[in-house]
Image (cartoon, rainbow, N blue to C red; front, side, top):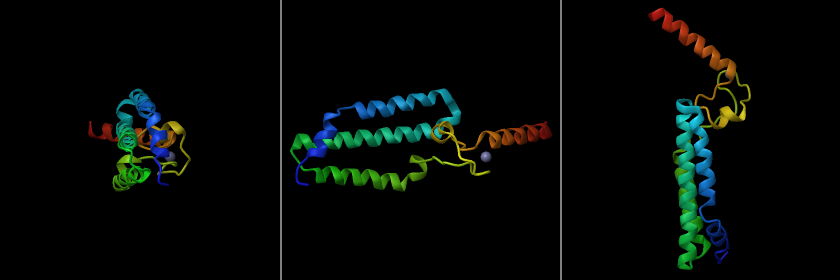
Length: 133
Ligand SMILES: [Zn+2]
C-alpha cells in the first residue's frame, strides 16, 4: 500500500497501451461519418490512458507512493462519469426492437440500430424525400 509497485508496472509499459488504443481508433476511419461520435469517445479513452501513464511516470520519477496514482485515476473516473454519454455511447441492444447488436454496431456505429431497423429508417426517409420532391 505504501510502495509504488503499480505505478512502476504501468510506467514500464511505456506508451504501448496508448499505441493500442490509438490503433483501435484508426479502425474507425473505415466507417466514416457513421462512426463520428464513437471515434471521439475512442479518443477520450486514449486521453485517459495517456493521463494515467503520465501520472504513473510522475509518481515513479518523484519517488511518490501509489496513493497519488489512485487520486489521479479517481479524477479521471469522475470525469468519465460526468461525461459518460460522450465517453460511453455504446448500447448492447437495438433501442427500437431490443434485438442484441453485433460487436461492429456496438463498438463502431453511432446509431446503435440493428440492420432491419436501419433499413426501415432508410425506407421511411426515402419515402419522405419523395413526398417533398
Ligand atoms: Zn432493431
